[in-house]
Length: 315
Image (cartoon, rainbow, N blue to C red; front, side, top):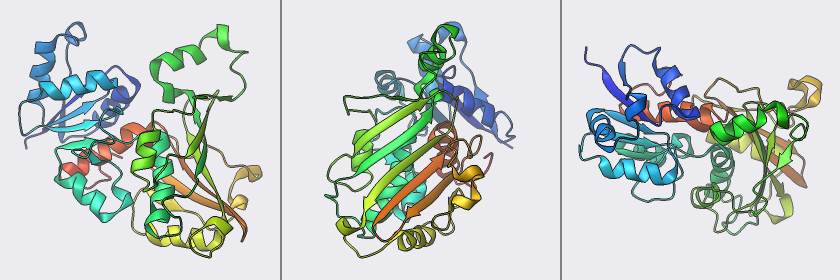
């Protein structure tokens, strides 16, 4: 049986390594690997990019755009894990759970933009609420999120794992304090909001795992509801989605000591939706692995859909 030829351009980066680690266990793929000494050789990259059935771009934005420009084989399917094409209307946005239309678009496309990790959590919380008219598109949204340091790639991993930085980085740290985080454009566009949220990400001194939280004020909502109503809505909205788990409202008793651990979905492709609050205030949260559903797991899920395979295969 012929195998799908897969090439990760940027295979030495965090996402590229995880994609290859997941795919190496599969019998239906052949992983193409460029000689490390030639990974910046344009002609050699061009050969690999055009010789694959599926290409994963695990590169900085400019390099990802360059790689796309080198592809002249119309059969090649591309999944871009950078931010370069996430608001490009010519690329399908890679969260199939958002709607049936999103899933069809991914299945039909040869160009899919893999979503950012924070944006995955935010959009899976907000898109259903905007789509269901619980929230007006002009709602003044805020988003608070924390992540392990692997989300910053090799550079940040090196900083956090350096003994010289142990004491100064022991505390969780707010960052992107100019309020211009690179995920904001896709958080605005793919949530259905007219404005980006006030986004305050926090990086913590652990390797992987994240929680994304959005507070809602009930009196500002477009429909009269409460935390229980929102939890029930999410449960119905994501019914049948294989990688989404929606908890009952106020499920603190299910978590050790009553705290929400950001690492509970690590090494999986699952995302968990949790709703807390009452009839006045609501906190909607999403928990996922920033390197799983937030990166490599989502990329492989999208590849499976593009190839017409079971989306759970290899995950």
